[in-house]
Image (tube, rainbow, N blue to C red; front, side, top):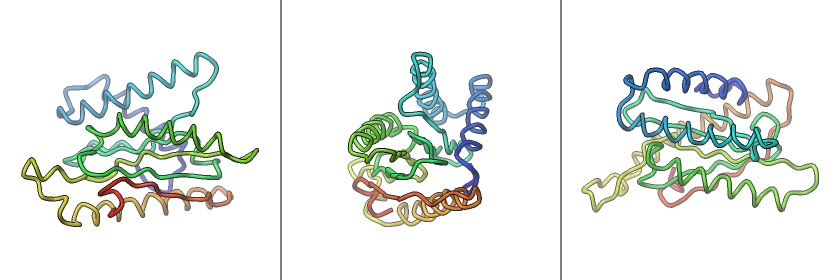
Length: 191
């Protein structure tokens, strides 16, 4: 989960972490178990697609943070180490990783497919479902965090670190920087 390491290294480390959680589910809270199950669903789908001739898009688990009060994750669709265009998809309120990854998985795959259809020959794309901050809840549940910028400010620092880390990883490998885009929904635009 260290920005600045390659996507390949981060993915391998997080898959090893998932192996540990599968063997020791009792170490996880209910919210963490929910996130681990969703990551496992994505990895199982990828393995099934790979067995049928290649996962499209390939998946990289860039972050899987189970140590914070609210677990966080980032899943890339494509290859962040080589693709020329990278889009960061940022969720809005009510989309902490344990609650929002399923929807972000579908949205990210759809965006990846659409971008691939309109890419010039030889261009490659990656989409990162970034659920790396504690999104606010709904005011209807008496959580008024959405009315302040506190979650966005905290999340923005981590998002900037992730984007800068990806740049550092690419530059240290002698690669060109990708074209970076951010697509954010609702409260995610504040982030």
